[in-house]
Length: 256
Image 1 (cartoon, one colour):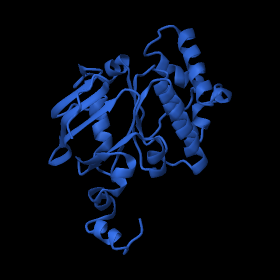
Image 2 (image 1 turned 60 degrees about the horizontal axis):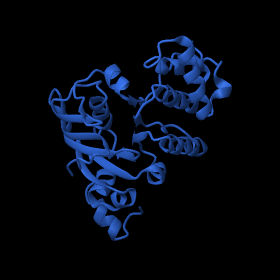
Image 3 (image 1 turned 45 degrees about the horizontal axis):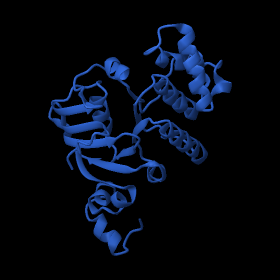
């Protein structure tokens, strides 16, 4: 499905391609995200989701295609420049500065916009309060649990004052209660006017949060729609469960 070209679109990606040697990691990927949406990018492991994020955010240069953020062409823009425009991302594996405090880790994100130390620390404290981390500000980041590190990664991205957040498996490795906490936090972030695109494997979170979802498989977009629509899509079922799975599911031979 081509981008809509709506005036409200924050992100428009058209025909993105990336090849590593003989491997086509992403092939002709196209998506659009409107202001205020939460959109999920899902697909099996190795589908090319993180590679797509890396191209959108400037960490990889596409071989072909276009990336428009707030109606501006940003393909090939360096990550720090994209961040200053209001595009921030998190990473699948959270890597805080372990010997620095939580407060200073979050302030690193704020320093992309604020040069003064007191300003960056004030923004960091504000973000920590919003994400329920105020009591951990003085703790070393290395002492945090997996859930704490995920939340810190989100906080550092938020401290850049983004218009668009790209979240790469921010719920991976969390238990059910921790997932519910992150889902609530993301709803709160969206309520402030920030648009969110998330790569996620936790389907109950995808269904709960997402206005729409795109499905990537072998580097190609194979479906888009509401979470209810894509979970019923035969191509999506086969991408996750294997060839013939859609027919077996319809016949009752396997459970959904």
